[in-house]
Length: 176
Image (cartoon, helix red, strand yellow):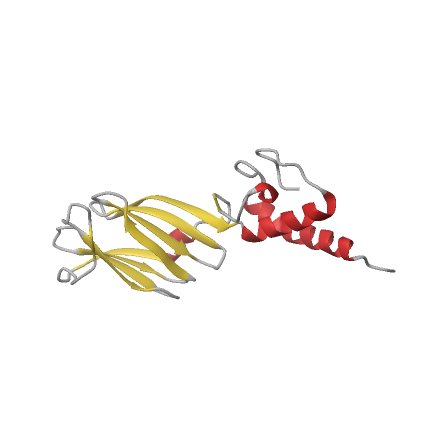
């Protein structure tokens, strides 16, 4: 039996796409072959690693030196480590510091102030999946967490398949 390069490419696409389809059955907006470049896609049903790999505690310690002050200069955070463990210490004019400890990381992405009391934290669990978190430093709690994944591989596979078979760019198109 002779195997043609096109059939190998199509078979590879169908073997790889079920894992993508399990995460996001429909694309928000245009499907990957229509994206001008790779993008992160939010949502998914792989479980929230934020719940499994993060521990938030209050610790008795001095106000950290340095760090990134909040816009009102009242609070600050210090990030420590990156991979496979990291932590963020938060001073919020309280008797204790909030310590957020991360394990199982591929990397601690960005940590930045959204406003005077909210932090944006981007975590990478693997090179292609992560969580975006909004953390309220006054209450010491995450008020938002959403999983995301890097759509780069899905885009590359879809573009390659479209070169072979042609594709439509229809908003909300389901993964095929």
